Length: 288
Image (cartoon, rainbow, N blue to C red):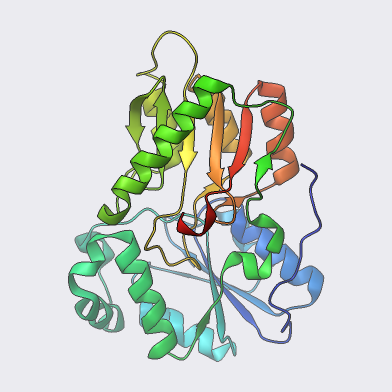
């Protein structure tokens, strides 16, 4: 599957974009894209979460995760109306958050929903749009080619056992979806070796490496949750995911076409080909 040029889905390039940056390479890719297209861009870096490199060459602010008042005031001063969430953030405890007055009011409003990612992120988007007058856009509205496409990403294919493991993984994730736990599962020969929770996919792969069974390796399956706010926190894979799957002794990765992000698609494909792993986008229809 060939790499396609980055497509601009949100064509209003005059509107400044504010990036709420987690870890990884996605924030840097968004910054570079905005700079190439001439879109004004401003980045909020979160202490303990955002990579230092993401702030290079871009107007930015460092802030605590729950310093909502400071963050929103800075964004407004820059004329930002559009916001995009990019990169993973490890959820801290309420004690670690030390929310400011605005963040405390936000947490009070969402109440019990703060205990699940879907409820928390969905409520956060509603507050930002309905009460704070921002517009939250999905990464795919800025970088359209990041959405996973259906089909194989390289020359390796899933055999019958791997296909059965993929089906098992899809069934497990769909059964878990209403519990708002995680987006990934590893299945080997029909056995669930591990389910993603708060640790994230990289740590899940490290954990299941110690649990693998003899025989054909397992499969990592990643799907969006059924009630998920699609503009934030879509399942994501990149070259590091492929490397982690190889180190864990897996045979392949299955992601949801149209419901997951693939960062550095050409590198993902080349890495998978070199490692002997398959990567496949699953067409799950409108009910996935």
